[in-house]
Image (tube, rainbow, N blue to C red; front, side, top):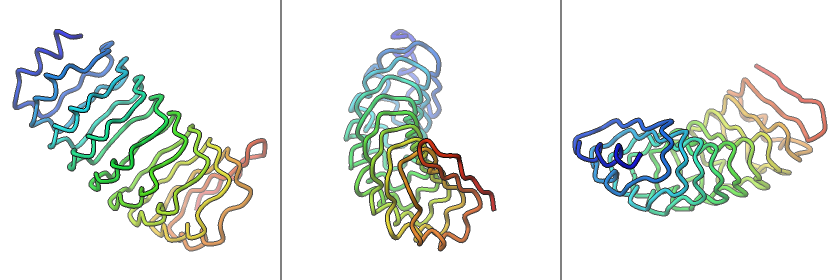
Amino acid sequence: MYASTHLVSRFRKLEDLNLAMNNIRELQKQLFLLRHLRVLDVSDNEVSVLPPEIGQLHQLIELNLNRNTITDIPETLKNCKQLQNLNLNGNPFTRLPESICECSSITILSLNDTTLTSLPANIGALVNLRVLDCRENHLRTVPSSIVELKQLEELDLGQNDIEELPAKFGKLTNLREFFIDVNGLATLPDSIAECRNLDQLAFRRVGESNYSTTG
């Protein structure tokens, strides 16, 4: 796919680029000359490296890297200040840089089926986040700052290794859907009663029957 990605780089005013399912293994640097790009979809390819030049796409609103083989997220992604929808599902990276939380415009963050062992300690800085999906990872803890996500409506932490939630979890008063099934959690914090907008909850320890309720 080198020829194709090199060709599209000539369209300097391009705003929406879909390169999904093209067996792409490398993102050529010419691609990052598309300074007007707002939507970039590179899902279902074989990309193993996200070049630091991604940070040059200052107008980017949506970035879909779903189902590639990316092992590292560059710090320069923090320069995409307009980013609202970031999909990193299905990539084998273990760490999300703290600097990603400088992208405070993000409303949807998809981190399902990676090898993440922790979330950024300052994730609460994503003040506009509405949807956080972290299913099927290796998370053991949940940062206490998560309770600062006042706009959060959907949170999926299912199928991880979490044993405890922050005591002040109830501060997530806009939360409507919460999935914490298949973890090591024995109980939910008492403060969850303060999540009065919650209408869907899935909670189950590993090896136990699922408890799910819809309000």
